[in-house]
Amino acid sequence: MVFSSLFFICVFLPICLGMYYIIKSRTYRNWVLIATSLLFYAWGEPVWVLLLIFSTFFNWFMGLLIDKNIGNWRSKVSLGIAVAENLLFLVFFKYSGFIADNINGVLGTSIQISSFALPIGISFYTFQIISYVVDVYRRDVAAQKSPFKLLLYVSMFHQLIAGPILRYKDIAEAIDHRGESAKEFNYGVGRFIMGLGKKVLIANTAGKAAEAFLGTDYSRLPVTGAWLGIIFFSIQIYFDFSGYSDMAIGLGRMFGFRYKENFNYPYISRSVTEFWRRWHISLSSFFRDYVYIPLGGNRSHKVRNLFLVWLLTGLWHGASWNFIIWGLYYFLLLLAEKLFLSKLFEKIPAVFARVYLWVAVIIGWVFFYHTDLSQALNFLGIMFGVNAVSASGPEVSIYFWNNALFLIIAFISCTPAMKRIYQGIKVRSETRGTSGMSLGVIDSFLRPAFNICVLVLSIIFLVGQSYNPFLYFRF
Image (cartoon, rainbow, N blue to C red; front, top):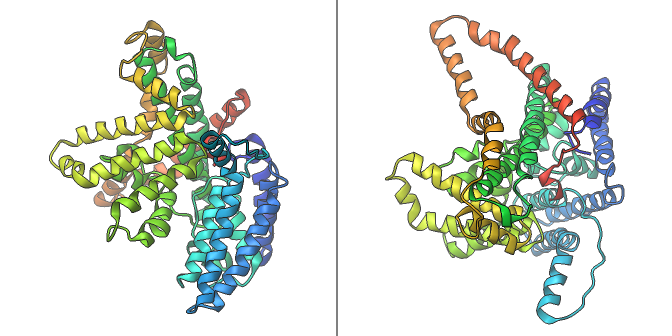
């Protein structure tokens, strides 16, 4: 089950909210969330929900051991066992086939790994559990005494299958003492609708458009067709994932939880360094706090630490060489920026830095999209005129002009332009002492009307189309 499905929007979520708010007891409300979250996960993965429950209870027990033995070697051993268990599950389910295939290719062996469906969201909830036991060891949080409250943290359907990656310390207090309110609920509904619109109206439209150029017969693909196709994919993946994060944050607010932002307009960045401070923030901060800094950060072996982080970042996204190359590609760019490019960006106009960022990210998406490296390199060559059938073609021009308005809307939506207009109106209203008349009209009428239009359009699109993929669902 995904958020952008009619069943979730029209059946699952209303029932879940109804059950939650009918009950007044915090304890029983938590049980409603646990039950509905496990049902949400088991809807498509009835077997792997047992893995999630087992992993949670095991780490709950190890957390108690770590907390009990803080200050001696038993605590460190318990932490090592917990982290090893989590990584072992992740490696077995996600990477065992990839490892076996590469061993067979290098050594000529015939190791066989039974194929099975990857447990949905295993990368996300594994990192959440690891952050919990590490934070207990660091004394950043106290060990949770109730295994069911820890299960609530791990399994909450708001963010279970696609993040943001939560830290236990960020919601530990809210598990027992969150305060639901009409204001927070209304904000959550609006945020969910905006995320739904991003996913259904923009990401799905861009993804369908990208299919005209990506994964096709590249021998007939012109240069402009390659660029247009990968630009559509760049739009799709941003609005797909950021839209899902918005929906998760909105759902959290509906139930009294505050999740941290996961995206902050990454495509307006002036460098790759800035881009990764704005893109998938919860993943970047996880690797920073639990890998990069413990390895020494900028203090020692900086290049090695950066290499390992981006190798792991690539692997986290998938068990395939294209993801590894994608991660190491960003390692090289970030290393170059640390060594000399960042100083250059300070001296040149911002527009050149933004063009560099866009070209760098688009090239990265080429490797992210193509699991076949030869196909990725062929496509990249066509983008720059190598083996391209032509520079352009009439069909590409027609396709571009047919989607020109959509592209303009998508590009504007990649920026904080509308947010800044709203803030400008707010400032002027307060400065002129008009009691926020203009702002009141927006908040009371225009914004709800806009949300209703987005919701209705999204539902119409979902009813009328079968194309509704979720790219990060597999991670």
